[in-house]
Image (cartoon, rainbow, N blue to C red; front, side, top):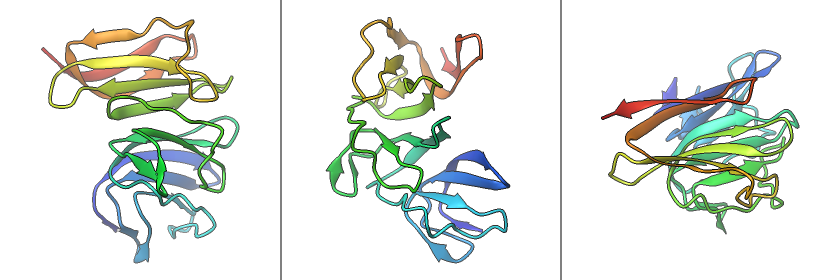
Amino acid sequence: SAGGTVWDIEPVGNGEFLVGGDVSFFQGQIFSRVARINAAGSVNTNFQGSGANTTISSVKLGSDGKVMVGGNFFTWNNNSRLYIARLNANGSLDTNFASNAGLPVVAAVPLPDGRVIVGRTGLGVADSFVTRYLANGAVDPTFTEIRNVRAQMISLAVHPDGSIWFSGAFG
């Protein structure tokens, strides 16, 4: 059982998975908003993922073992991280990725080359944006941002052919 709302679950192999949300405990073990769950169902205490000051809506594992998290947070362990952060495999903050997503992140999908496709949605309005970031967190200048999509984005995925798909409340 979880204490709070789980917004995203990501399988990581060997029966383990990452969870993210407004969660404060899982199976009686305390953590804050993101955790790695062992195959037996207990919290992996070697993963130091706690750190967001508020909601995590997206948690995705990259091919390099690093974890992209997105949500509505402003800090990670008192470091300024506006809506997006990358964690090392052990859950510590990856300081080599520094970005300001500008709007709450619905999904942050790491690509095999280290870049990240990010779906963002407006605060209180039905406008969504898709942006690509470089491996260091800078906006990728070679990517044409998808702007002002008249939808409240709910989910985003990148197809193996590179196309970007997202779901939402369109209107």
